[in-house]
Length: 116
Image (cartoon, rainbow, N blue to C red; front, side):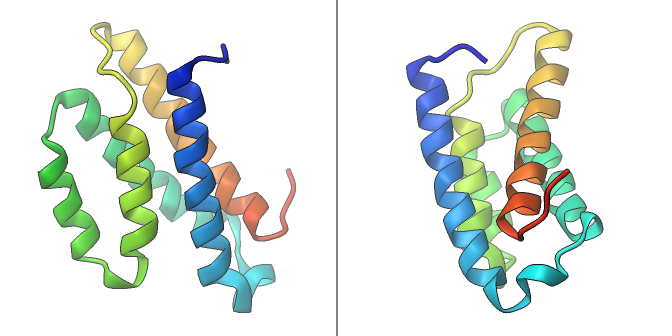
Protein backbone atom coordinates (compact mmCIF):
# COMPACT_ATOMS: atom_id res chain seq x y z
CA UNK A 1 0.00 0.00 0.00
CA UNK A 2 1.34 3.39 -1.01
CA UNK A 3 1.75 5.95 1.79
CA UNK A 4 -0.67 8.81 1.18
CA UNK A 5 -2.59 11.27 3.33
CA UNK A 6 -5.72 9.14 2.79
CA UNK A 7 -3.90 6.01 3.96
CA UNK A 8 -2.60 7.85 7.01
CA UNK A 9 -6.16 8.98 7.83
CA UNK A 10 -7.44 5.44 7.35
CA UNK A 11 -4.69 4.11 9.62
CA UNK A 12 -5.56 6.73 12.27
CA UNK A 13 -9.25 5.86 12.14
CA UNK A 14 -8.56 2.15 12.30
CA UNK A 15 -6.20 2.70 15.22
CA UNK A 16 -9.20 4.15 17.07
CA UNK A 17 -11.09 0.99 16.16
CA UNK A 18 -8.28 -1.15 17.59
CA UNK A 19 -8.20 0.77 20.85
CA UNK A 20 -11.96 0.66 21.33
CA UNK A 21 -12.19 -3.00 20.30
CA UNK A 22 -9.38 -3.89 22.69
CA UNK A 23 -11.09 -2.08 25.55
CA UNK A 24 -14.45 -3.76 25.07
CA UNK A 25 -12.95 -7.18 24.54
CA UNK A 26 -10.33 -7.05 27.30
CA UNK A 27 -12.23 -9.30 29.75
CA UNK A 28 -12.56 -12.03 27.15
CA UNK A 29 -9.49 -11.20 25.10
CA UNK A 30 -8.30 -14.75 24.70
CA UNK A 31 -11.78 -16.05 23.92
CA UNK A 32 -11.98 -14.22 20.60
CA UNK A 33 -12.15 -16.59 17.68
CA UNK A 34 -11.95 -16.35 13.93
CA UNK A 35 -15.75 -16.64 13.95
CA UNK A 36 -16.16 -13.58 16.19
CA UNK A 37 -13.75 -11.55 14.08
CA UNK A 38 -15.54 -12.92 11.04
CA UNK A 39 -18.64 -11.04 12.19
CA UNK A 40 -16.63 -7.80 12.19
CA UNK A 41 -15.36 -8.76 8.72
CA UNK A 42 -18.94 -9.18 7.43
CA UNK A 43 -19.90 -5.81 8.87
CA UNK A 44 -16.84 -4.19 7.27
CA UNK A 45 -17.82 -5.67 3.89
CA UNK A 46 -21.32 -4.23 4.25
CA UNK A 47 -20.06 -0.81 5.31
CA UNK A 48 -17.54 -0.50 2.47
CA UNK A 49 -19.96 -1.88 -0.13
CA UNK A 50 -22.45 0.77 0.91
CA UNK A 51 -19.72 3.41 0.72
CA UNK A 52 -18.80 2.28 -2.79
CA UNK A 53 -22.49 2.40 -3.80
CA UNK A 54 -22.72 6.01 -2.61
CA UNK A 55 -24.99 5.40 0.38
CA UNK A 56 -25.10 8.60 2.47
CA UNK A 57 -23.04 8.49 5.66
CA UNK A 58 -26.07 9.56 7.72
CA UNK A 59 -27.87 6.38 6.65
CA UNK A 60 -24.89 4.29 7.65
CA UNK A 61 -24.58 5.95 11.05
CA UNK A 62 -28.11 4.74 11.82
CA UNK A 63 -26.62 1.23 11.76
CA UNK A 64 -24.25 2.18 14.58
CA UNK A 65 -27.13 3.58 16.62
CA UNK A 66 -28.96 0.26 16.37
CA UNK A 67 -26.07 -1.49 18.15
CA UNK A 68 -25.40 0.51 21.33
CA UNK A 69 -22.93 -2.04 22.72
CA UNK A 70 -20.61 -1.59 19.72
CA UNK A 71 -21.74 1.79 18.39
CA UNK A 72 -18.30 3.37 18.90
CA UNK A 73 -16.49 0.64 16.96
CA UNK A 74 -19.06 0.70 14.17
CA UNK A 75 -18.90 4.50 13.97
CA UNK A 76 -15.10 4.35 13.66
CA UNK A 77 -15.41 1.76 10.88
CA UNK A 78 -17.96 3.92 9.05
CA UNK A 79 -15.74 7.01 9.38
CA UNK A 80 -12.77 5.05 8.03
CA UNK A 81 -14.79 3.75 5.09
CA UNK A 82 -16.05 7.22 4.22
CA UNK A 83 -12.48 8.56 4.17
CA UNK A 84 -11.91 6.27 1.19
CA UNK A 85 -12.86 7.54 -2.24
CA UNK A 86 -15.54 5.86 -4.32
CA UNK A 87 -13.86 3.83 -7.05
CA UNK A 88 -15.30 4.00 -10.56
CA UNK A 89 -14.25 0.53 -11.71
CA UNK A 90 -15.77 -2.70 -10.44
CA UNK A 91 -12.26 -4.08 -9.86
CA UNK A 92 -11.41 -1.04 -7.70
CA UNK A 93 -14.61 -1.42 -5.68
CA UNK A 94 -14.06 -5.15 -5.11
CA UNK A 95 -10.44 -4.57 -4.16
CA UNK A 96 -11.14 -1.84 -1.59
CA UNK A 97 -14.03 -3.83 -0.06
CA UNK A 98 -11.76 -6.86 0.37
CA UNK A 99 -8.82 -4.81 1.67
CA UNK A 100 -11.00 -2.95 4.17
CA UNK A 101 -12.74 -6.09 5.47
CA UNK A 102 -9.49 -8.05 5.72
CA UNK A 103 -7.88 -5.17 7.62
CA UNK A 104 -10.77 -5.10 10.09
CA UNK A 105 -10.55 -8.87 10.54
CA UNK A 106 -6.81 -8.73 11.23
CA UNK A 107 -7.20 -5.81 13.65
CA UNK A 108 -9.84 -7.76 15.58
CA UNK A 109 -7.82 -10.96 15.56
CA UNK A 110 -4.55 -9.34 16.63
CA UNK A 111 -6.22 -7.07 19.21
CA UNK A 112 -7.35 -10.26 20.90
CA UNK A 113 -3.88 -11.74 21.11
CA UNK A 114 -4.15 -13.97 18.06
CA UNK A 115 -1.68 -14.38 15.22
CA UNK A 116 -2.05 -15.98 11.83
